[in-house]
Amino acid sequence: MTITNTRRVGRTMEEIKQLYDDNLRLHPNMTRQAALVQALADMIHNGTLQEGARLPTHRNLARILGVTTGTVSRAYAETCQRNLTAGIIGRGTFVRKAVPNVDVFAPPFLRTEKTAAPGSGTIFSQAHPLDMSFITPFEHLNPPLEQAVRKLAACENINTFGGYQPPQGLARHREAGALWAARFGLPVSPDNVLVCAGAQHALLTVLASLFSPGDRIAAEQLTYPLLKQLCQRLRLQVTPIHMDKNGISPQALEAACRTKTIRGLYLMPSCHNPTLTMIPDYRRREIVSICRQYDVAIIEDDVYALSIEQRVPPLSRLAPERSCFIASASEAMGAGLRIAYLCAPDSWQKVLEQTISYTISMAPPLMAELASLWIGDGTADSVLAAKRAAATQANLLAREKLDGFPVETRTTGFFCWLKLQAQPGSSAVFAARAREKGILVADSSCFSVGGMIPEEGVRLALGIRDQAVLASALETLVSVLQEG
Image 1 (cartoon, rainbow, N blue to C red):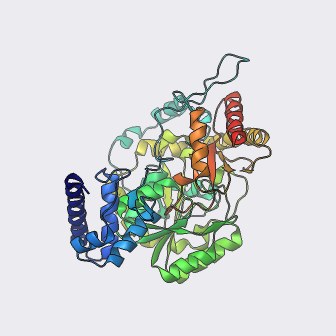
Image 2 (cartoon, rainbow, N blue to C red; image 1 turned 90 degrees about the vertical axis):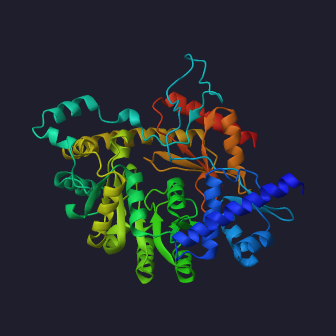
Image 3 (tube, rainbow, N blue to C red; image 1 turned 45 degrees about the horizontal axis):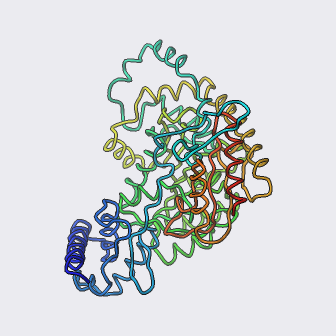
């Protein structure tokens, strides 16, 4: 090793030690392993440890930190499980290539409507791709704002919405939230509803309120990418739980609860993102029983449940005393609305209200009033029906174009799941080839927890306004499949 490389490794170990010591000092209950994992994760996320960088040897780092080599080995293994690093036999542990963000923020371009001249087909390119990786739930069908704004302007108390309101939201807005939660099959009192600035803010509120650094949150092996992002920033650990055709496995969940201290369980049980799996009623009851036995809080984020026809009682209805249910309004009424309703038991209300107050003071009252208007006058229901009708046509087209390939669809789903070869990495390869042809898709690695990919596949968003564009895009993806 050269002198330059030796100095670089030395600086890296010093920076790791500083963050490691800070973690132990700031979080007295954190284990040495967790403190090291968090130090490494922070350095990877802030760019101090860049893609391809080799971590110090187990023995050298253990000596600097004053821990056993076993502690370092277990910490390195956990960073591999988190998909942050990769171990190569005989060479060491290296920082992995970053997984692209999906569903976390809208890409700078959303080319969904441009077509070529009639009869010449639709042309996609790497410079101007069609984004099928980001779910836009048929936003061209969102309610028109002009008429709603005129109605709001006529309200006698409209000026009150420009001032501070309670963090949990106005009583009338919480009443609207209870009505909206009922659409998901969850009867709830307005007193148990908090108004949040979208489902993402609701999820952040729950994680920041109910859990402490180092706590473990269980989730399916493939899960909502933002859960991973938020847990990393809040220093929570995400434990992957085996899943099958019926969703998360109760047996695997019970084993994790028995061998590890699981504090929370995150699920999308009615329309799982990305596989569209629905957890059947009998399995939901098993999951609730396990959560009660091991005192596990349930986070139910069924954001796409209203896009489908079949209804199964929410887990939050079966275990209201330990469940937070996130009833998002954005998918039906528009992403820019940024309103979601967080339904939680009495015992958690105060701490959740405090977190809302600390983070944003309150959800924008004017937007909450707009959501209440649309829920009350039936606009939300009619728009949702129109979106489901458009989704029906899009799914028919997807099944037609992908006929002969293993594609999972729901009649009125806003996306579909295209299964690929079981060979490891096949979905990432497919996504790369699709991008070369001007189509962006979300592959399994975007959703995997702990580097565990139980099923190779890609999620295809279907909320495209022009059916000719969607048809051409699906044909392009078929050509990628046929190329092998």
